[in-house]
Picture 1 (cartoon, rainbow, N blue to C red):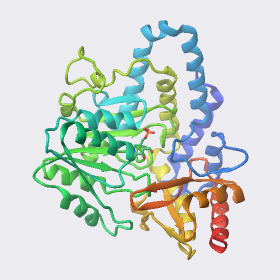
Picture 2 (cartoon, rainbow, N blue to C red):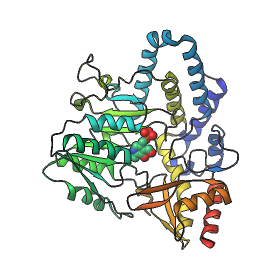
Picture 3 (cartoon, protein in one colour):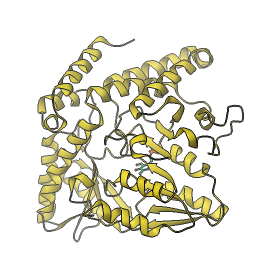
Picture 4 (cartoon, rainbow, N blue to C red):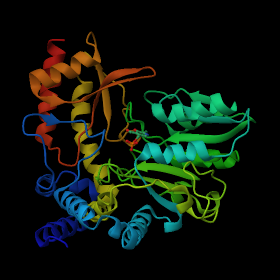
Amino acid sequence: MDNPSNTLIREQLAASSARSAPEALAHDDTFWTRVAAEFAKPADFVHLEYGFYHPVCRAVFEAEVAAMRQSQICAAHYKRNEMRADYEAARAELAQLVGAAPEEVAITRNASESMNIIIRGIPLAPGDEVVGAELDYGSMVEAWEQRVRQEGIALRAVELPFDPRSDDEIVQCFAAAITPRTRVLYITHLVHFTGHLLPVRRLCQLGRERGLLVVVDAAHSFAQVPFTPAEIDCDFLGASLHKWLAAPLGLGMLYVRRDRIAGLHPLFGDARLPAGDIRRLEHFGNRPDSAHIGLREAIRWHGAMGGAAVKRARLLALQRRWMEAARALPRLRLLTPRDPARHGSLGTFAVDGLAPAAVAERLMREHRIYVNVIQGPRVAGVRVTPGLATTFAEIDQLVAALEALNRTP
Ligand SMILES: Cc1ncc(COP(=O)(O)O)c(C=O)c1O
């Protein structure tokens, strides 16, 4: 049952977002104050670590809680009689958002699960190579490394430039690593260490030209950057839904191009379904129904906020405000590309003479600002990730704190 006041607010937001171009809306304080009112925020610190997951808005939370309560009342009766129809409705709405057929989309529990289904499921022979990047997400690299150990495949990780100047520069890094034994091109669309946004269309095209299977980790890019798997032309894609779609925690998406479904070995056993049916890949066992019910509500709110185009413009505007100020501070070094077209809503910096953990600790203790410590290949810094409810005033608080750190490291 829809709460009429939630529906009214959603419709008002949808009317406003339909009237303005994303770049103009990104700076419209009235619109974002109304959006922020729909999200709960901590009372005693400024939260700038929305890269882990994004909290849901009030209406999604209410839908989730109602479904959770109902699942404890009707229990098995719901699971056996109604769950399938609700689940298929959620799949259809998600597929529509993704620009794919429902037959190509599975709802998983997170991006890690989606990526493991892909990484562990692609048929490869000993000696076959996978080309990825050293800034790929750690547990996804570990999933590939299991196949290195168990099956003797090889993994080649390219070094990405910290401040790429052109798409060609990045495409060249990957192209140079491809050999006659390469079978898979593995692309992290938006890098969690640094916020690099890779030219995914060009990279998929490279994979096609070389006859490779193309896998995209879109954990952070999905619903933050406008694209569809079909238009970038990949074979497999995994995404988080609890990040920038702001869907309930515990949701991911798996996209497999129709003609690739039959060739993927299922990670979870299911021998009953036809080989070309994606449902064969999603036999996860019991899970909370509140997630897929909340997902449908989250998709509606995503649309009302103007979808990925508006989120991209808003999050970039928030990021640019502090990153431009930070570049002027001599003790701060940004590890995120300078060109706004080459980074997403995550930005990472280091302070000369201070360990990243000490920077994060001081930001919290002295300024009540919560950020994340990042440690990866050639990367040690502090990551700042604003969210949909973040205000420019909060970003200005961060800038003041960075100026203080610059004065007294
Ligand atoms: C690039 C990348 N892949 C995968 C994941 C895992 O996401 P999830 O929490 O949905 O499993 C993350 C999480 O931050 C990520 O940044």
